[in-house]
Image (cartoon, rainbow, N blue to C red; front, side, top):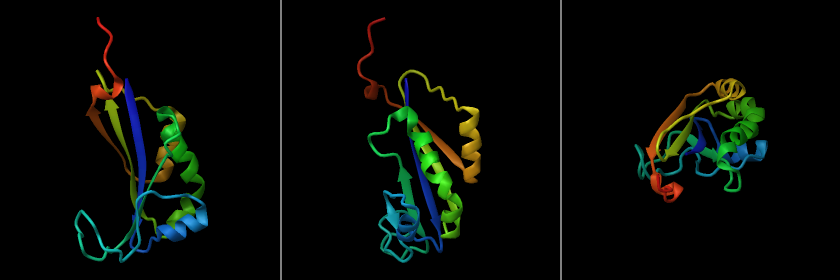
Length: 137
């Protein structure tokens, strides 16, 4: 069994997550405006030289549908986000697995991932405790 937790990270030196939220209707989770003081990473306690935001599916979305949900929500606004300065980013998935980590993406998902024009990264984490006890063999 596997569970995939994807999120999209956008950033740019002229990117304002607040302006992007107003103009697209998207709601970002973690967000930093240009000049906000960094709390971690390379810039703790220093003004950030970029704006950044993270976007993920809300908790009610079934795990197997989260990637499609993000793509459905973001792709219609992609050009606007780029115009608002979101010129860098990545889509990342942490994949939790029990016994074996198998991933499969449909051709339409691969096409839509490519439309983002940013890297897609994966981390696979062995997490048998997430799936409850195994039945006896």
